[in-house]
Image (cartoon, rainbow, N blue to C red; front, side, top):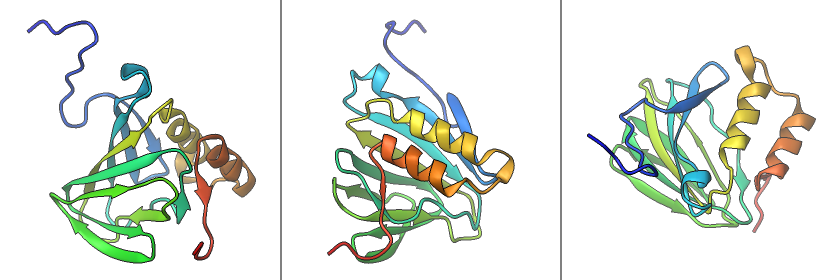
Length: 158
């Protein structure tokens, strides 16, 4: 099979990836570089009982989550729900959200970022800060988040 030069065809698990801590793998399926910054699509695999990002917002980026396998505990606004395989969730800009795998099975999520810019740089930085399972330095994590349109939210913002 010969694909056009700019086309991408990747199977599950294929592509450049980073490991975040000891329980998460983020594979960059499509990046902003591939789409002129319009969107990026990442495959996010979380082992059982793995915490994801805490409550946060993006000022300029919307996120779409699609649960491929397993289930995710998803916070959107002031709602916490369990999203099972086949569920799609759109999180617009300025909406508080968070997610974790609180189940006893592996979770596979597809996460789309719109626009994407170079969103993979955030995950590369996060992988570096959590290398070997270390807890990231809070100041370095906050700086990384703010460089990449991610603002932590401690309490309700309403």
